[in-house]
Amino acid sequence: MLRRLALYWNTIRHLKWIQIRYQIIYRIKTKIFPFTYYKKYLGKPLFPVIIKTRPCIESKDKFLCNNKFHFLNLYHTFSAVDWNFNEYGKLWNYNLQYFDYLLDHSIPDIEKQKLIEDFSAAILSGRVKPEPYPISLRLINWIIYFSRTNYRSELFEKALQYQVGYLKHNLEFHILANHLIENYYALCITGLAFRDPDLINFSMQRIGKELDEQIVADGGHYECSPMYHCILLGKLLLIIDAVKNYPENNTNLNFLEARANKMLGWLDSICSDGETYSRVNDASPEIAPKPAQLFAQAAELGLHWTKSNLKESGYRKFCNSNFDILIDVGNIISSYQPGHTHSDIFNFTLNYKRNPVFIDSGTSTYENNKRRQYERSTIAHNSVVINQDNQSQMWGSFRVANRARVNISVENNHAITASHDGYHKKYGAIHFRQFSLKNDESFEIVDKIIQNRNCNISSVAYFHLDFTVSVVNFKENNIQLSNGLKIYFQNANTISIYNFHQAIEFNKLVNSQEIAVSFKHQLLTNIFKS
Image (cartoon, rainbow, N blue to C red; front, top):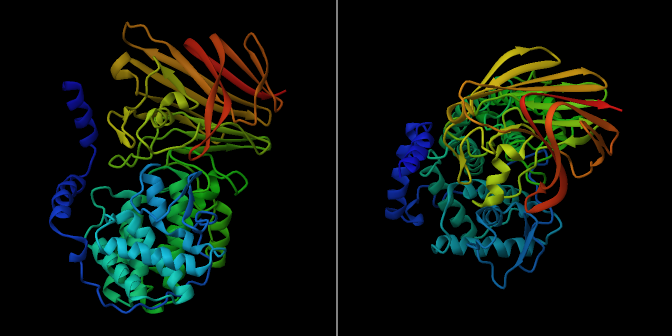
């Protein structure tokens, strides 16, 4: 019981008071006020929103007609669409309700409109529980579709108007972070569709406030997931595009463009060749807009950005003609919303000659199961694990209790030395790690464990290989990889090669290899060109 109370306390104490307050308010409020209580925007006329660029919203091959849907690599065919379908988990159901498949040009309009009408009837009758996050994404997709086609129906417009009223009065203050800014994005687009200056001003001011808080000084989103960074940047570019076409509403346009440029600079910095990013924290392909799409849309909007110097987001990038290395030396900086964070301090990913070698093991699920626990754990990352334990106390699908803290002692353009205290409370141990990019042919890591308590510990450094790379030769302390790289370990006690499942997409795992190296006090790892 005491352990459980400590777990909750060490989680809750990081929350903002507004989150706790609205957790209570919304639990009561949703039981009192039905969806059709929110009538403020009922009867508001709907106008097309001018968007000149192509929105970076992924939508292809998600609806296959005849009530067949494909999300997160899972297919399901309905006899009649069940908008509450949860057999594949909450995220699959959310995707069903987002309606981004309306933007797939290959689907006949008659099929799309049947789905809109069916969902409209379901939410108005109370058969679908309204939730602010899917409402936010759905409103934008509905309005983009309406603006392209001028599709109208009494049921559709009524459902849209009620959803705007519901969202305006049920903003996700209990969650904050990416959820809240998505709420404001949606209200901004609907404000433009309603030609409602009050709603536009309300949402624009709050978008600015949230961008100020959520985008850190180096341009990264504070949840430190490149995937969510791209999702939010894509919506910001959509807002900039839409607002540009209504000069009377673009008071904050310069501010929005400046924030977009910072976000573009961060994305450009962490990407390899401006195209792909390491899938650190919660990140998976085919969910967010691709960097190339975002850069193209930004250029079309006349934005200008430069690569940022990574720092405040906790990442560092070392590059030369052979190696492209992303390193995590950051704390959990969205302390009150760490849901998409992993226990991955001193994790690194490495590309050699533009191809992945050492990777994050990936994200395949948000369900509260063993796989989710593994994917958020330290052992799933390229770092050191003590006693098979996590640096930070991850629990549930999205929660974190006790958190490790990082201290950076030395840093320059090609090396960084830091320590973290994630194992100090339990085991009296501090982990020091030094990364050094020596030259075009060598990358070195030095791990040190300093212990001030007399208890037995086991220290294991893990190195996860991309599924395209394998160990081809293993002799004593030397490993030869299939891509021509070699690894030398100094002071290793044992070196083991295991198989693991790499998540390359949601619900899509492939076999790969990991190297586990046990050591006592210090381990030197040299990765070099053979």
